[in-house]
Length: 73
Image (cartoon, rainbow, N blue to C red; front, side):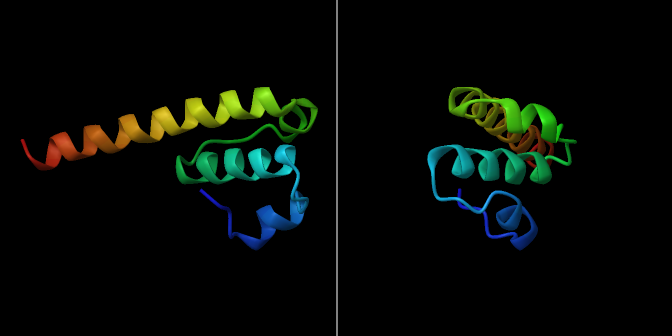
């Protein structure tokens, strides 16, 4: 998932792994309408960000599957 939102991209414009993961976390949190603590985000390392990204992707997938279950019930 590549972030195209200009506000998010401008906040973390680098092409290094940390910046890419930070943008990914922000995009997923935005899609889930979840608040982000930028201080925690900034002080996390790449592994922290990857872990958050995985957790957010699981929540998004779970939310999507629940929505599908309601549609086909």
